[in-house]
Length: 239
Image (cartoon, rainbow, N blue to C red; front, side, top):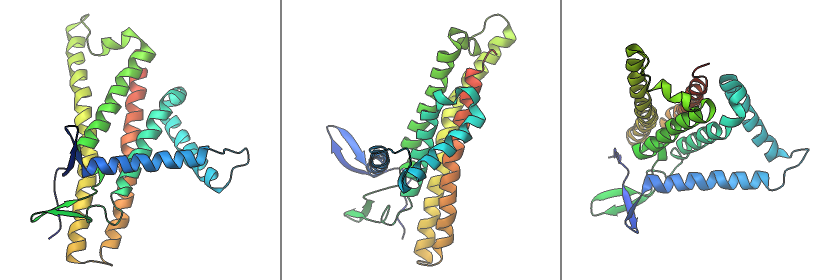
């Protein structure tokens, strides 16, 4: 039977902190992104080579895309938005590599994979959601100033006070929405692939694998684009 677990499995405990297979995959994705960054920026040229051209094309495309959403604030928001997109898409795609979820060891009769898709763990997606929503509030206060707080606490009128409470609820719900949307789509895809590989291995799972590659891209795009939209709304408060 295919191994399916809703939560990440603990591999080791270091200084009282549990190291799960999803956390290990997260570190692997971070290492891959850092390595690619170092390799492509250590010898930048005015006339770029093949690798630098690909990276410039990706970064330039992301910059233009997010600029169409955030406008004049793109220079301030781009590092966050690009980091979210690149990390999420890398984590989604690494989770589809052969060996992820299938190579591991047994504890008695229970199988524990060494690696698990990072975004198929709710802890990872919840952390990303908290970072995104915290950044929205941070840039809101940084750009608008203390007046930004009137979005949530406004005692001038009972209607505005109620609207402020609804805004607070809305901001909290964004954390839940961000986290569960990404987690649900990626985890469901991994379950689908595991079941199809168990029932009909080799050729049959390939179309589903292609579909999950597309889903991984779309989910990274949706997460980062919604963050861009909410950032733009936050910094435009009061205009």
